[in-house]
Length: 173
Image 1 (cartoon, helix red, strand yellow):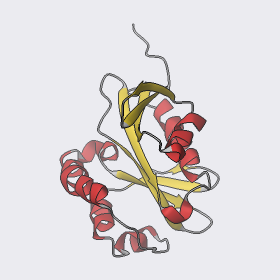
Image 2 (cartoon, rainbow, N blue to C red; image 1 turned 45 degrees about the horizontal axis):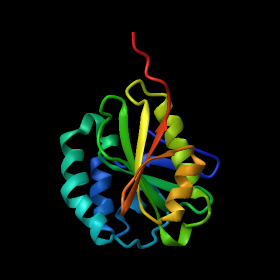
Image 3 (cartoon, rainbow, N blue to C red; image 1 turned 60 degrees about the vertical axis):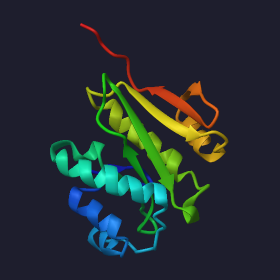
Image 4 (cartoon, rainbow, N blue to C red; image 1 turned 120 degrees about the horizontal axis):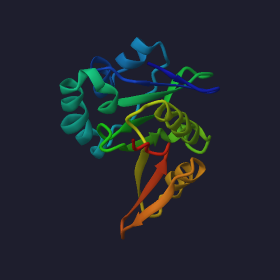
């Protein structure tokens, strides 16, 4: 399963590929046929890999794409530029997304394009009507990604903002 745009290939990492991602030694890039550029796996991502992604992707192999990272490959450079994820399966049509662009690829519109492509993918699915996202208050780059993709501020906290985007109307019948 691959989502393709003019500049990007976006694909969910299989359980085996997710293990290679966590190893962070170039083995994932070798398998994907792209150039290896070391990435920093910060404490939050390391925790999420260990306690969420790696554990749950193995338990949900038939719907692994809701429990894994989706690699964003910049086609012209053949390099991974960032990643997206769902935060579990849809619940009554709602599903939360998360994303991150590697520092050297920020401010190039890559994530706005990737989120837009993911929205289009979600529109094709019967089980998704609404996308949710959370940003840290003041993270203007992340907020712009969501605004460009027609998310609206749903709730503002002291430290975080929650966003919502309808991808289609729920048909009751």
